[in-house]
Amino acid sequence: MHALVYHGPEQISWDTVPDPAIERPTDAIVRVDATTVCGTDLHILRGELREVKTGTILGHEAVGEVIEAGSDVHDVRPGDQVIVSSVSACGHCRACRDAMPGQCRRGGGWILGNLINGTQAELVRVPFADYSTHRRPWDLPPGDALLLAEVLPTAYEVGVRNGHVCPGDTVVVVGAGPVGLATVIIARLYSPRRIIGVDLSTARLKAAARVGADAAELPGRMIAELAEGPGADVVIEASGEPNGFVLCTRAVRAGGHIANIGTHGKPVPLHLEALWRKNVTITTGQVNTSSTPWLLELVRDGHLPVSLLITHNFTLDRIQDAYDVFSRGTTTGALKVVLHRE
Figure (cartoon, rainbow, N blue to C red):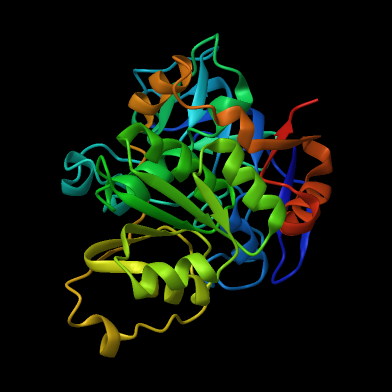
């Protein structure tokens, strides 16, 4: 088969590699019909996640067809259309039983495209297939389904839920990339008073307005007014940039919440000298994707207009072009790029 292989910082190539095989009875082999590039993949490409070894196939989100299942896989079978979760769950450890498979202690967690070969390939081995896949309904387009592998659960679990978004809140989302925009979409379900999107890209600010932000601003006047005035009830950091987090600490009100979604590959300052008296709650988190079934129904029922997040489509063999377009998203307008099997 062909797959995108990581060869070290700034080095990837579309290579011919051996097909994956069942290694454990709980594995399944999935033919990848659609995959995508994530901001975390860019961190890997820049060499910021050192646990990723040379020779690893990248990618951790996919939609496809099960073509083989191990003897201990009972919930999916060959021919089933599935969403491959970005997080693998053994289903039995304490963390998995507490609906926190991102912290799985028996070989799960975020392993695809990180500790083992991932989904940017024609085929992928999915560990713990019973707990790490979700059936894709026939009427859910592959592109929309792909967003349920990571983007939407991350926005909900790590952003909206951790941030305790409530009716009447002022919510600021710093970073209008795919996850930030998904956060805006999901936060609207909770009837906030207003949602403010903040980004350095005017194209992404326009996208924030399209998906439901009440205001979309460059960092500046509005953040200053919040900092000097009542502040925001919830501030969600979705940029992954140190300055983005500092902006959050300025905008949040006393007693408010900062929910960090962004993947930070560099040290981030925490100004406790300014925060200690504000009674601020700061949360971080690895997505668990335990919310995927609920979010799937919301997408099917039309409550989450997620198709707006998909801006580019490529065939799988053009994945290096997709990386280039996605990495320059502030100028290309790329949000989610979807790669389809030919």
